[in-house]
Length: 316
Image (tube, rainbow, N blue to C red):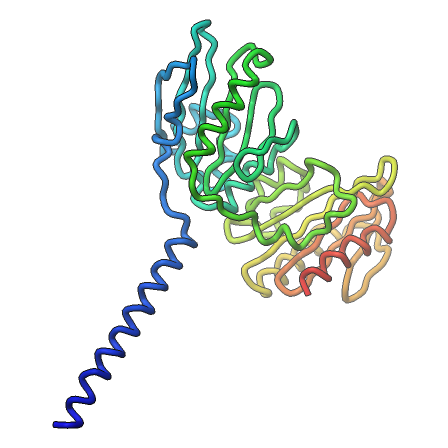
C-alpha cells in the first residue's frame, strides 16, 4: 500500500512535466512559424479626408499575374501566398492604392523589399523607402506598397499617413535574415544589398549564363552586395548558403567546371580560385562549410581575396 501511494504522485508529476514541456514547445513553434494574418483587415485603414473604395483579396497565381504583371514572377520566386488591395479617394478624386502582400515568413518579406530600396528612407515598419509616389516597407511576413496613382508630389504626405496607419495594424515584426551577418558592411554601396532564394531573382540582379549550375532553389539563401574600391571599381559579392555541405560542394564543382575552367587562371589555392576575364576583371569562387562565396568584377585579385576572407571569418 505504501509503495502504491508513492507511485501515484510520482506518475502525476511525470504527466505534469510532459504536459508543461509540450505546452512550452507549442508556444515556441507558434512564435517561430509567424502566425497567419488577416490582410483584408490590414488594408482597411482610416485616414481623414479619404474614402475607402474597392477591396480585393487574391491568393492564386493567375490573379497575381493579372494585377502585378511582370512583377508576378519575382513575387512568386519569393514564395508569394496572397495579397490584398484597397483603393482610397479624396474629395479631388485623387486615389491612393494600399497593397499588402503575404510571403509566409519574414525572410522572404525582407527579400522582396530588398530587391528595390532606392529612395528616401523612412521610419516605418522594419525598413521603408519612398520615391516618386511609392512607399515600400516590410514588417513580419508582410510586404507593403502604398501607391499614389497620380499627382504624387501633392500626395506624398498622404502616402506616408497611409503607410503609418497600415504599420500600426501589423503586430509581428519578424527578423532580418541571419545570412546578412555573414557579409562585410564596410565599403558597401548603398541600395545594393539584396536577399533572395532562386535563380529567377539572381537573373534580375546580375546575369550569369552559367548560374543554373549553382542549384539555387527555395532551399538556398543568397545575399549579394556591391562594394566601392575607388573610381569605377564596384565588385559584387555573393554568399550562398546551402542546406548542407554536400549540396554546397556539388554546386561549387559544377559552377567551377562550367565557368571558371574556361577563364584565364590567376591564383588557385585551397581557399580561393581566381580567374581573369577578357574584360580584365577578376572573378573568384570559394567554399567554406555549406557556403559558396563568389566575387565578380574586381579590379585586382587582392580585392577578391579581401572580400572572401571577410566572409570566411564571419562563417568561422
